[in-house]
Image 1 (cartoon, rainbow, N blue to C red):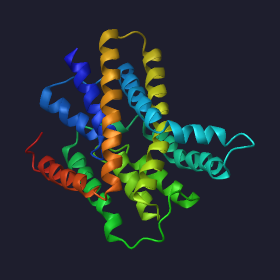
Image 2 (tube, one colour):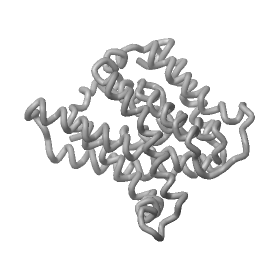
Image 3 (cartoon, rainbow, N blue to C red):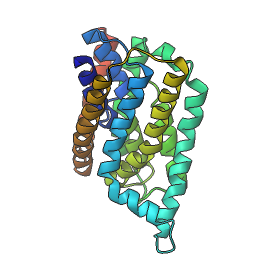
Image 4 (cartoon, one colour):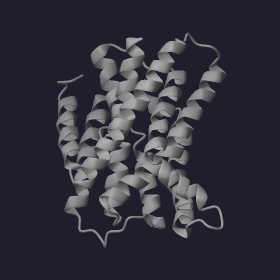
Length: 260
């Protein structure tokens, strides 16, 4: 039961804070000697964190759904297309690399380097001169953020860090970039959970603790809620650099073999 709780907490914290959930999962498995989560548990954890996003951004989602009616906002209607455009890259990369990405999870060089890339990526918006800031994405910006999300399939590359930073580089406000990042996470998390569930069904029954799955899902949801709200508060105050320092230090520790 403790294993499920730990994996749920790790998923909830690292899925949304810009520190890389896949990278930390590798580290926690090494530190605590945890077995990798099975595909069924992965599906449940992904959907636990997905539920957290749905709760926090429920008003935005209602507005987007309402945009499909005659009384809806055209800006919200456009956002459906932007989310779809931003989702295409991760669908393509996920389908192409699904079978081969697992081989690089055990490489400390890849993991440490990816943490360093995440650290640099998150400070880029403060270094690069940006165009006029806006709260909503444009088509090219949505595609760029989608490509950043697809790149984060690499362990050590933070999905939220890469997408929020890329949104900032395309001229979005920090809050607007974070909002679009989380909206873009909805189809990604749902798809990842659905794919893992399909693999679990195809593989047949595996030894599963249903109580453990429930504990893991609740932990991922509850901690995910806290992580989302914490990140939004820090991003609004321009403090994404805090996580950049953390990822940079962690990357160096991984590359020098001090933490694995």
